[in-house]
Length: 194
Length: 294
Image (cartoon, rainbow over all chains, first blue to last red; front, side, top):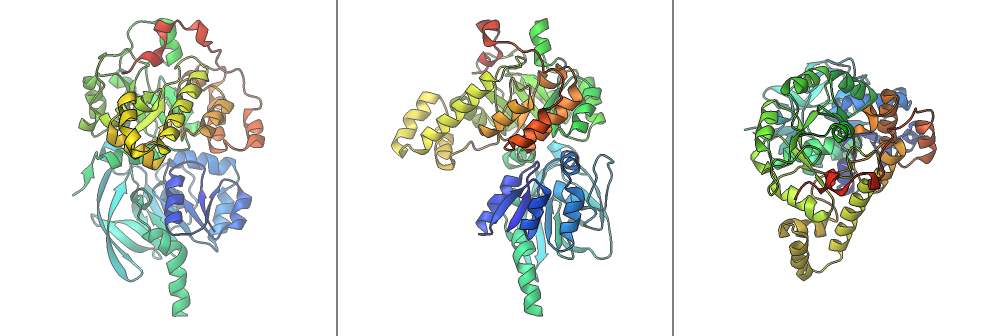
C-alpha cells in the first residue's frame, strides 16, 4: 500500500497515477497511518502550507523515521520538503535528500512551462514532456545523489538511496514511470541482482 | 523549447492550490498573516467585499504599488481581481506577473455583454459561476479554474451552497444522458457543446472547482469541501472577523481535515467572533454581486 500525503496540493493526481499502475493507495493525514503503508508520496502544492500542517500534526519526525526504511517520492513542493535546506526560513524541510533548493527559482506563474526531458532510469533512457509549475531548483547536492534527469544542465530529477525527488509534475501528465520505479521496479531490480 | 502559458500549465497551478485556502488581503501585513497561517495563495484587493458593500462607488483593479508590496512580502502565489470584461486591467496585472487573475463580480463590471477572452493571456484566470452553463462559458473563454460566486461580503454561506449544489447536480444529470440529449442541454445552458460532452464523460468540470462567497467559519469550509469544492476562497471572513490570525489558521486546518468532525471540534474551539454577516433578505436584489456576469 502506497500513501499520498494529503494535507494540501495535487494529491488526487498522484492517486490517479497509482490507480493507473494498479497499486493500492490511500490518503495520509495522521502519523499512525504511516504504519500501514510501504511507501509515501509528497505531492506538489505550497511548501509553506505543507510545513505548517506537517508541524501542527506531528508528522515531521514520523515521516523522517518512515523514510529510514521506506521509499518516498516527492514532486515540486514534495522535493522541497525532502531537501536538507531551503532558501526560505518559512519552510521546515525534512532532510531526507542531501540537496539544497531554491523555491520558485524560475519565477512566478507566467514563467511556468512545459518542455521535453530525457530521463535515465532503470538503465534505459526515456523522453517525456514535463510540466514545471513555479518550480524549485536544486543548487547544491551531496555526493550520494544520482541525477536521473537534467534540464539546461541543471538537475531536475534525482535519486538518493531508495528516495526520488522531482522538480516537475509527472502526475499532471499521466506519466507513470517515476512512481513505478520508486515503488516497484527499484526493488525488483535489487532482488534480481541479489 | 520551453512552452509557457499553455492551458495545461495554467491548470497546473490550479491543481497545486487544491486542498488549500486562498485569502483576500488588503495590504502586506495581512498577506503575511495569511501566509503564516498556511494560506496557499492570497488575493490582493483594495477593499474586501464587505467593505465594498459598505462604501459603494466603483470598484476597480487594485493599485499596482499595493500588489507589488504584497508580492515582495510573501512567497506564495499572489492573485488579483479585474472587472468583468476589463481586459486592459488584466493586461496590467499580467505585466505585473500576478500568478492568477480573478475576473470578478465583486468589482464593478466594465462590459455588460462580454467577458475577457482569457486564451489570449499567459497568466491563468479564475471566474465565478452559479451553475454549470456559466462555468463552461468561462472555461470556453479560457478560465483555468472555476469558483462558485456565492454572495461575496455577506458572511452567509447559503449562496455558495446553492451554487455548488447547482453545479454538481447539473454535472450529475449530464453523466446519465444519451449523446443525442447533450446538444439540447448545451443549447439550454448556453454552454459550448464540446465542453458539455467532456463533462458528461468525465463526471466533473474540466478544471479545478473551488468555493467562494460567504465562507466565515471552519465549519463553512468543511461544508463546501464535503459538497465537492477542491479549495476554498475566504474573502471577508478572515479580516472582517474579531481576531483574524487564529481564524485564518483554523480555516486552513479545517480544509485539510474537512472530514474529521472530532478534529473540527478542536479546530473551531476558542475562536473569537466571526464576521457579523448579512441575511440575503437584507441585500436588495439590485445589490447582489452574484447577478453580475453573463
